[in-house]
Length: 65
Image 1 (cartoon, helix red, strand yellow):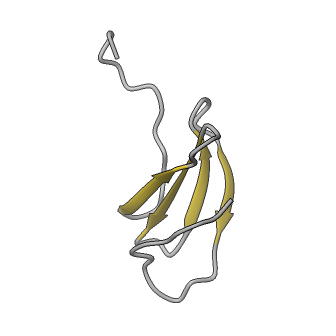
Image 2: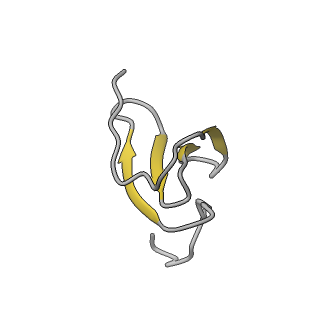
Image 3: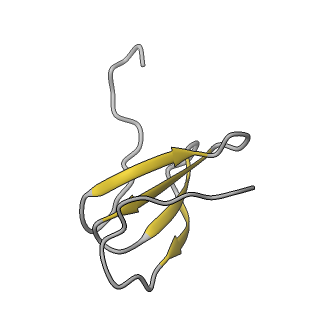
């Protein structure tokens, strides 16, 4: 934060609508108008998993651990 430089870009094919942090892991979940939910490693910026198959844009989601 002190350098004010962007470190990581989390890419979707369309706008990201919602994001949620995993409460005990360095993971970030995002949902998008591109009909996918993605799991990101917040340390590296790598997409660890993509959930596909939705028929419409995903506006919200929840998960349990």
